[in-house]
Image (cartoon, rainbow, N blue to C red; front, side, top):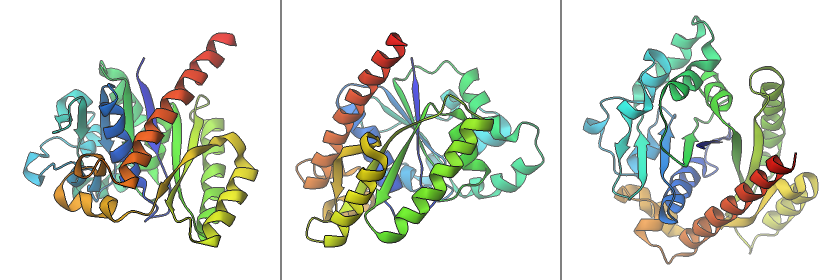
Length: 263
């Protein structure tokens, strides 16, 4: 069974795309077949995996607006077992084009259901907004992963995002769950980081991943080389954290399956 996970945060600069790219790479590295869907008009996930603009013939725009299949758009990356549906600037017009369409929130879900997805995981890198593009991702997904930067304003944004997820659960996708919240740009030397972590863990408990992603220069350098950090420098602290995060994700998945079987 293919599991579809949206990586979402309406706040920019929280490590959302970095998390999506490196989590997808880490899952591929431990033997899973993974499709990453770049649903951000900036196309940073595509660039971060070395996908040149000229290679982006069929994109996530074509999935949303034209009903193209993921199998038509998927490009094999340099990482074994990892494919990507790329994005480009065309996607920036999708918000306007979707407004007058029937069942506009279900376009991506319809595309993915129409395809025979031969992947263990589909990871969707969402744009930094809560518009129709992100709603499509959440409606199509089984669960949500939320990267959270360890700073004060991030908590306000998290509250708004959780409210939006509850609305989607009530009206568009009752099966949607929160897979977890991952603390990013974690700096153990900063007292505010510790304070934010304590607040988030006390409020959300087990929904917060035990793994944290540290601030790391090698993670920042990797996209300019068209590589995930895990490939660019596997030994750096950031890469090791993403590998650890992938293993924690798999453990959570196993617990999820046990809970379903027990229900």
